[in-house]
Length: 121
Length: 109
Image (cartoon, rainbow over all chains, first blue to last red; front, side, top):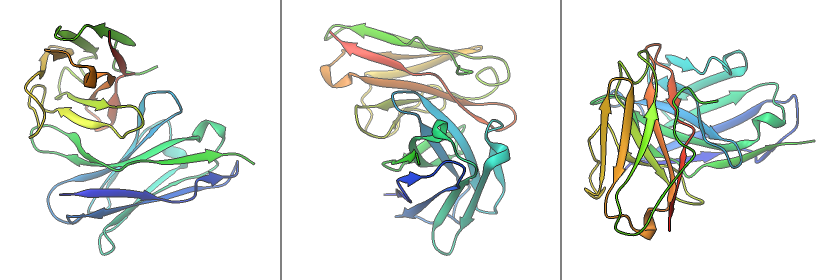
């Protein structure tokens, strides 16, 4: 059973960089044709796709975040990471990592439990 | 404002059948498959339907999905109190960007 776990600071100051890591267990990031994704949910709001990374390092970013966003992967550690620069209060959200299954379309089949990040001084 | 449009709320009584719609365009739902997610209060979303109408193992057959053109629907039959949750549709656009609907809060009366 694949499991994903987000980790990182719960509080980030405005203008700084938000950094999160997702650790994958019960499976390998480098096996299969899966993509690995970050998704966020603003308090009381809906889901927002942030971006994907493939095991090769190829990335796809939400155009609205692209200028501030970096997603990277470390297959040896079974981790992928998110860096969002120049954060503001608008980046306060619950951040999820998820696996994208490309078989029969693309869909998020496994999710982490989420980690809440607040942007505040 | 989400690219995929869902009604903000839906409701039904126990045992009833309810449907939730998801409307998109040719560049997303019209040319790619749709998935649906259930988010119970305080929990992460859970995959409910993939590839328009496929259920993952463990999802009851009370849940079904369909797609026609640029719209999709999730149907829940035999409504139960445990079904009270937020439901999200998702699709990918032709540029490989992920898209979610705004979510529908289902209330079991």
